[in-house]
Image (cartoon, rainbow, N blue to C red; front, side, top):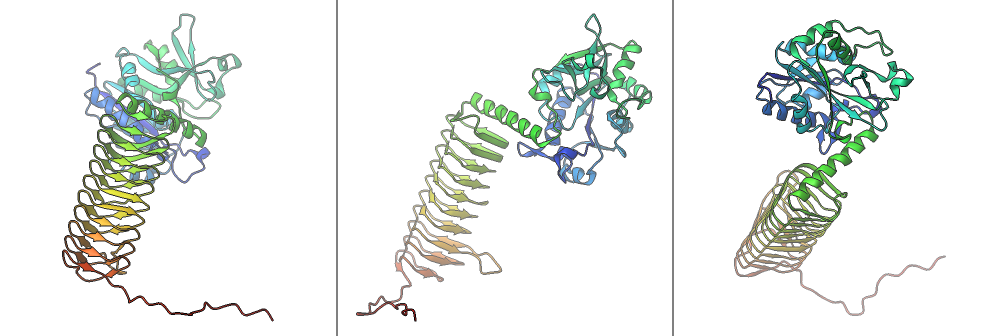
Length: 463
């Protein structure tokens, strides 16, 4: 790859009217991230590989405030396209940031599936050439067509609205990704006119200018149709989402994960996996997810910003959100772990148990129908069905502490702040609001009594 400086311009000024959304088009979500994040990621990768210190220039227009807020942490330069007069006008808006040396790679902010490997191939074009990423499409509708001469040399690009019937029959299209000699760019842009069907300044008109100026023009085909898909409406967004998910599934399969059905998995973030991981159908992985060796994730689970250590099982229909699951632990089915939850080794959290901002020590169990919030639960504690920690007094949260080997009887309410001593037993149905001493039995039951001969009330006969 060349040592000549590389600069990147990303076109992201479009409104996306066909999305029928208050969000700018490039902020529509794909795989859990805005479209533009995918383009910025591949841009950064290419600049890094090329050894270029230049930050990408992002050309914005509609929804600029939203875009800048969403990308506040992005390492890019901003250029405003005040009025959307075509792609040539958009690149011209970036000129104040472009050095007239090296090459300029133009990317579209609504083409999110381009691979760095494909752009790497484009960068291998001759240094003095204008290079175009092209594609052969069965249905080229909507794309500009590549015009070649009898020798197969690229001579021009004609946009669909300006094409003749013969030109519309061509299947080789312009993908919108161009690599342009920087020293030529300003001159070519200055010669653009809006003498076309849309009354716009087409960036693609520089191809004919390059040919006229004796600059080599090369068309380099993309590896596949999927990665050059542009997004203009919800249907195209859905198609891109499925393709992205297929890529994610293939990557996990290559890393040794068993996917029960690769078509029924959604990855909306970054996932790292150990050996012999198994994932059942309709699982959603969001944010940063780490799955250790031998982890099994049951059907219909959602894992968000979660760490699941070796040998743990997440049973079906469970939500693990901002939590850490220790080695050998079992969660679910139908369990919910909320942010701040830490389960140590061999913990069991069963069906319809919710845990929030709590730590469960090794071997602790809460197998049925409980809420454990803001609690520190010791080793080998058994929490009976229906138990809750009453952690909120209407204004503040308070913690509950349960010592090792305690036994909490079913249907108990632990009113925080409160401590249960090691080895303590809480009788079923108790409301505990003061310290329960270690090793003893604590309960708060009213005496049971039976009333002989008592009769239930009966309805009065209708009048």
